[in-house]
Image (cartoon, rainbow, N blue to C red):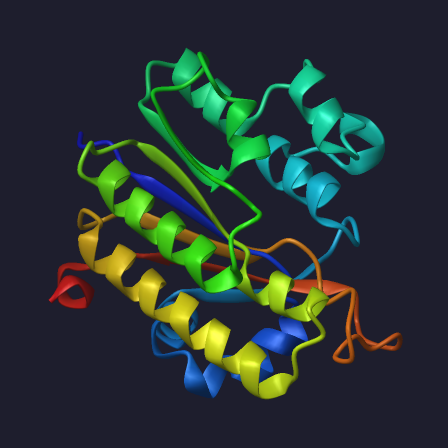
Length: 220
């Protein structure tokens, strides 16, 4: 029986309401949502580090205790890439430098990008490293796009946020087409927008969670 590959694509600040607002402009995410399952998932944290630690460990922040990047490097909590590697499954993590360094010596493929880069350059590098990792056929691949969150913290408006989201969507489409048939794509946000003029105090604390299996038709 052929083993299914899994790609986890994390899009920083992709809250559920933001996704639904942007969806008409996001051809590839829209396809994933329509062909698969789109869920409004409760956010477990309002900042990146504990939220991603929860995504990768399956634990709530109060259980994993990872609230800073420094703690993440020292934590003994096992994450999905480490569990996969221990089971003999080739794993890849493509993310910002501090996060990627956590996995040095623990998994097969690591791609790190300096988070001091401008948003467009950061996401472009993440995309390039993801394609390089795909060529090595990992069973589990995790990639992290930060552009929307960076634009939010720069207090960019709706037009810039939409432009950045469209670029990330284009990268996701190319990743989908580069994946093996039968690959499970898991796309999720880590928390809703938490800064800048687009932040809404009354907004639902939820993120987009989309799951779909890549078919031969989608790869054409």
